[in-house]
Image 1 (tube, rainbow, N blue to C red):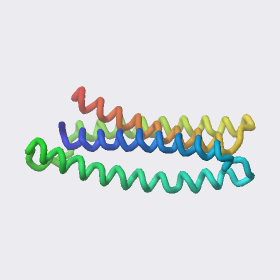
Image 2 (image 1 turned 120 degrees about the vertical axis):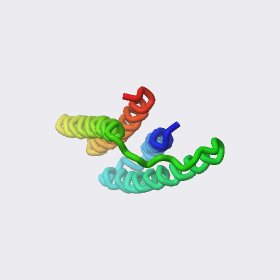
Image 3 (image 1 turned 45 degrees about the vertical axis):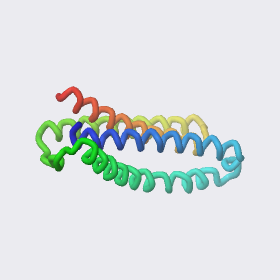
Length: 149
């Protein structure tokens, strides 16, 4: 497993955990009636504003720990940090996937708002478009490294 593979696996796991956490938190908050008032979008934003930096920190810490654990278990020497044209191509594929997901989520969120859905619904569509775009990016990169082209 290459260094890029290990980093992508950690990112996939953190994305899945983050998506599951946000869904469970939204369901719990909806059940508790926290989105019933006129400040529903503010309550939603206060919840989401903490998810983003925590998921970034979890990805960084997870990557470091996973690489250390992998090196200890396999006895593999220091990983190669050389980036070649193939790595750049795989990164571009991933960027396309995240941009497609974010763009589609944004357009669908705007359409939902234009169809008189609440701001909360539009924000959730946009957020999950970006979240699934990031997950798709990681899956595309991982698949590209596994295939080798």
